[in-house]
Amino acid sequence: MSTSDKPVGGASTNSPVTPDSSASKEGESQQTNANHSEEKTSPVAASRSAALSNSAAQKNNSAQSNIAAKAKPSVKAAAKPAVSKAPASKVTAVKTAENKQASSTSQNQSAAGASADALSHDKNDILDLVSTSALSTFTKRVDQFLFVLSAAHKLNADSFERVESIKGKNRTYFATSKEALLENGSSTNPKAIPDSAYWVVTNNNTAKKVSMLEQVLRQLGYTPEVIASVVARFSSEGK
Image (cartoon, rainbow, N blue to C red; front, side, top):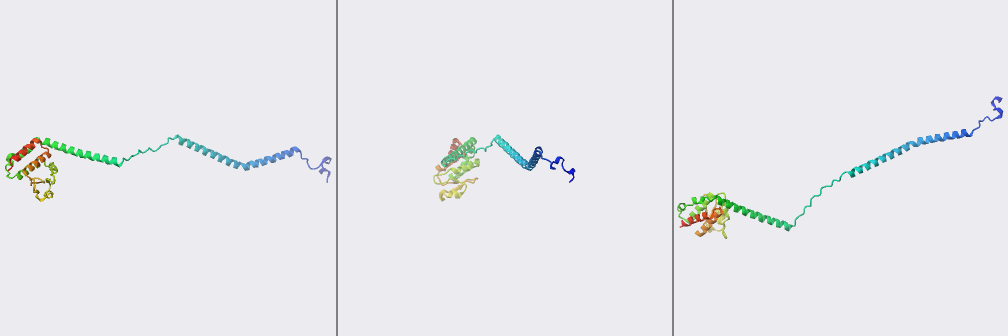
C-alpha cells in the first residue's frame, strides 16, 4: 500500500458517524414511513369521511321530510252520518198512518169531484131531458127507470162509473156486464141501460127504483132540488 492511501496521522479510513447525522437520518426515515402510512390510510379515511357525509345528508333529508309532513294539515275522511233504523213497530205505525192519509185524500178528492160536478149541473140539464112528456111515452115503470138512467149517463158519461159503488146488502146494482149481475142470482133480471155500456138490476119495486135513482143522481153531483124534481116526475108517471 502506498503511503498516499493511508490516512494522515494514522487515522482510520472509516469516517466517524456523528450524532447529528444519525438523528437526521432517523428523522428522515420516520418521515418517509409517515408519508407512506398517510398514503396508505388516506383512501380509507376519505371513504369514511364520504360515508359520514352521506349519512349526515340522509339524516338531514329525513328530518326535513318529517318537518314537512308535520307541517301539512292532516286530512281526515268526513265522518258518514249515522243512519239509524227505526223499530219495526214504528215503521208499521208510519205506514198505517200514510195509508189512512192516502185513503182520506182519496175520499176528499172524490167529494171534491162530486162538488165540482154539482156546480156544473146547476143549470138543471137533466130536467130538460127527463120531462113529464118524455116519461109519458113509456107505459112500463121499468122502461121509465131505464130512460132516466140513460139520460143521466148521456150527460155524465165520464163520471158514470161512480154508480158501480151503489150496492145493496147482498147484491150489486150496476155493472158493465150482464154476467156480473147474474152472479147475485138469476132472479135479478139485469137489463142494459140504453146507449151505455152499463147494466142494472130491475127486479125491485117502485120504492127501490126511486131510491136507486136518488143515489145515482147524488153520485153524479146533482143538487137536492134537481134530484127531487126528477124523482117526482118519475113517480107521477108510474103505472
